[in-house]
Length: 312
Image (tube, rainbow, N blue to C red; front, side, top):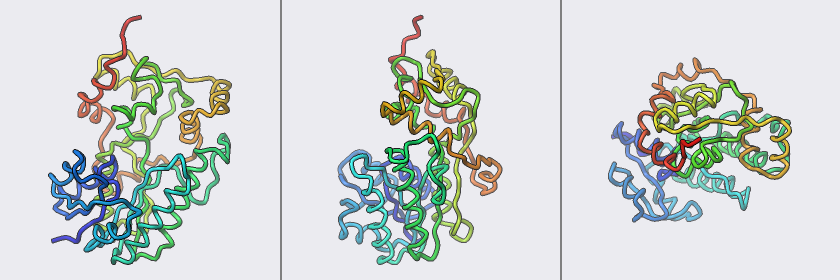
């Protein structure tokens, strides 16, 4: 039997996809869950994940969950109230994993995050988004310097799943008015990733450290202009959906007013990232597409955009 893998955030988007792919391959998975009775925790148990009650701050719970694991997947959400909290979680789990005998760590950073590069010129260096980038870069440094036998850094791009459910808030009023006011540029491709592809890459990196060890792996499924992506969502939902590309003056005005989503769009728009799809394909992990995603998630998309009126 393969060695167990500890998966952080297994009830979430990335961790959940990785846990599913590992279980499909017959790999034992351990996960820490805050509420073992929750539907998401029960779903994990139903696919054979061994769950342990507790939080990352609970050293005893971490020790139990990490026991027997030789690889670990780390992924943490930014804390808007305490920007240092995410990095502290990374360091806490790294220390516990080292003590438990974990040999290989896979950490999910973000597409375009380079620990050696400054934030994009259009961002406030003291703002939340620049701080987010700084924390992610510091976390990468912590993983690299932690002294494990091997590590892999995954850098997933913009989630296609962000068009669905509560996550659609990332696209402003698209799910209510049908229009997304954005700082992105018309006709310019955006790197989108299907979270199922993150699951496949994560599972591969966790179980094949000979190939993935020491690597920083950009993950995206397809480069698609925003208006085309929205058009595909409109196609499966039957709704009139569109993007309004804001002029620079309005982008600047919204940024200065503290619009966090505009700031994130500026980061994504202006951060130079090597969008090399052939490099992504070279890993041999099958990739999805936005069209396949939209068809697979048709029911969720229809529900998300049900309130949009097609009336003129």
